[in-house]
Length: 510
Image (tube, rainbow, N blue to C red; front, side, top):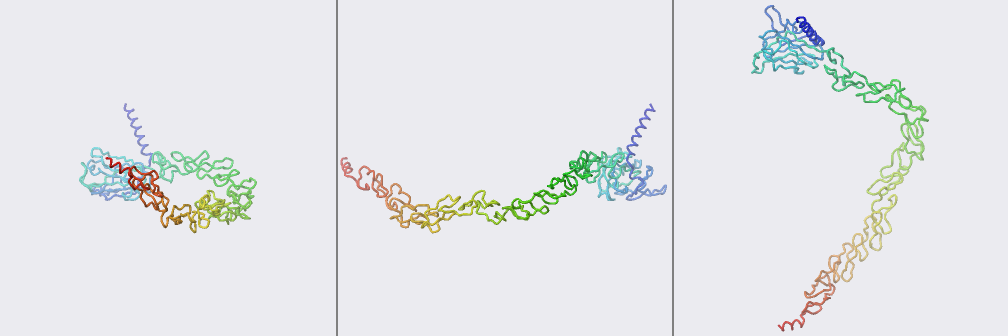
């Protein structure tokens, strides 16, 4: 039974030793500092800060009792820290001064410049171990121990002052850009950041050309770049391209050029392959192409002539509707035709005409006609598509081609802007006003209104409908006032204004 227990214990100890020693103690024999140093009486010696990193747990760093206590170790460079082991003096009398401590990781000796790795808020005199193991997955150059008694009241079991009683501080980890128990080098993490301390995974993905959880594998299967998402170009003999930038180590296959062989050759003469570096065509371009790579297309040179193979200019100018040194621009600014010398007509809504022949796609403006909308309406017409006929303009003059207005007014008997309105029945047949149709001397018999074109209302007759019909009249004529359907019973006369004798005799009989 003893042998079995011993074997188990030895196995456990071996495992513990491996798990601790797999990381290097980065603090061992490194420079250390503390806020004050206690001088022992027997033996007479100073209990300095470096005693906490000398590898001997019986040799301790001690400070005076004060309101604050601080100690740090310089790791001589930024390190990839995994965990910190702190062992203090095995004396129950100092527990109350140890409680409430904090550990910071910083790149300077000022803890405020770093990060808080641990703060004791739960330990008591009964629960705190002599050897405290603190997980601390940070980068830093200094590991700083700090404690204070500056803000009473303090938790139960705490002293009113604190001091340093550190027998050994061990900082386990690796150099930066490493991970795992064996401090394996990180892969190619994007931006050169530190990989995960334990797993080696990259928090923001991989550098271009790398893949895998740990970014330790080059792109394959003819891919390259960020996340290996880019496809290799047309590399010579199907070779894979470089995993980072996609360049082809042995150049390009015929018909491709450029660093990544992703560019296609231009219109080289007789289908010759271009230079696989810059894409130039050794024998020039086929007709219709120009430039170093023959990828530029000639413009619209006059009569379909080829352009200059180097600069693309047209030796004899441009086709109709085109301009520019390379004949690659359509006429603008309301011009068209050869050398853009033709001026567009009045296209509908101010639209530009066709750059070649000057025609208007959506017709002409009001008062204009013709294929090029360059002619005003004629033959006594006006308006959209010249479909409106002019009115009775004075002396037979033509009306305005856009709105049909008559420049010298209207002939007698007509009025209005376009002289298309007929005068009403003005008094004695006089002509009306040719602007508003009003009658200067009023209306003829039987009509009324501003333009004398309204028949008298029932019960009125005569000039301007000024006379009232008799109240006993039936069918009062609006011109004469005669009662066309006679009078009511008992009345007589042209306007039924007289009582009849029959009515008088009838009354006497009563």
